[in-house]
Length: 550
Image 1 (cartoon, helix red, strand yellow):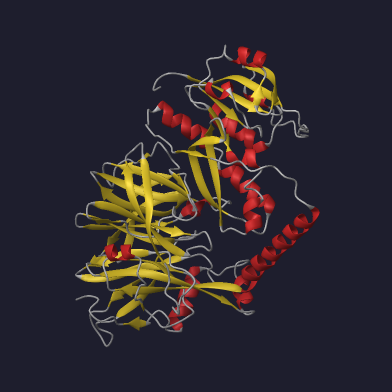
Image 2 (cartoon, one colour; image 1 turned 30 degrees about the horizontal axis):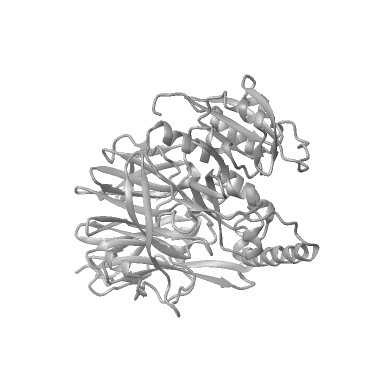
């Protein structure tokens, strides 16, 4: 199909549709090598009220294509309509109706009839809310006879248990580019054979008044929980040492964690390490509730004085007006680079440590114009690969995985042709250092289905090329019972051969936490907080870990 212009058709109930459908079609309309030849307005005997908003009329997007009204009975098109449709050389139909098509029509287009499963089942907008599931599965399928489907794309999204409206909006925004992504794969000749399996479509039964009332009560319950956490809940994180190599984590055994400080009220997260002058240094995100936004701090080894041999806190070695976190370390030859997460500034930058100035210096901007979250780089099979998620108001930073690649770390970076390559709240967002075991690449990812940073999933990378990506989860790491920080685990990183770093989360609920939330309305500048910390000697806090630098 590469090089040939694709022609497609659209199936709708009304030409004036919902905004998300209009935006989805707009993305197809903007693609090169793609042309809309026919719009089918179906009438299936049911009552479909026209949308009051006339701003999203399909004719505005495709004024020159043909329009056809068709009658459908039990999923079957009338014979005279089929005769007319046979005259159109269509590559695929995008079905945005709720009709469950059967019969010859499914075989007319070259690549079939594509549709979203929830349009046919009237879910998962409400079903997952009713089940109180931590994630919602969404499917984009090719329709086949007898209730079978060939899945083209799927995603696992977070479930907004506190709002049906936000749940619906999230799904609509997440799937906007799915048809365009499939078209790009076909144009690029990417060979994929999705699994063929039977799909039993659920009947669209009306919701009883009693069930509707119980459903409203459940929504109310989760709204109360959400506001209670927002007002009185506060997250604390701590860094821990695990005396095992990263590949030992594949077994999924409980981790024996040595916390840096036996303190329940710290916010040190996203730990990484690098070498300088034969010394192992720890770099991480620190949050002060007065500053609100995170900044990067480090622990350096003291080589003289009464604290010789201990690690000392150097507060704010990297600090910007925007939030900073996840200071991922990349080693290239004799050089160490740091990639702090600065998604608010919508760029990804490489920083190099200057031992003379004792500062990190920006040396390269890898990506511009993208709110990249937790950028993670690894060199694999002759290329540099960058994994990240993308921030948005719909939590895409927790489930929408993107990949970029380059031949040289400081060279030009290109986007993976299948971006976003994955939609999965359970195993997309990067969670630390990828590693190789028995010539297989493993990528740690966060499981944010129940809570942000709830646990770490280890994915085995099956395919990784500029056009393809596939990985499978093989293991999951959770905080052991009775841990000082039992509510989350979202970073694992390499320190030395038999030393790994992790972090842990603890959620504290207390009325006094509301005072800390007030700083979100008017935070203090980092410089003032740092000066106060120096006066209180907080920045001289030290610790000693036996054999860490041996």
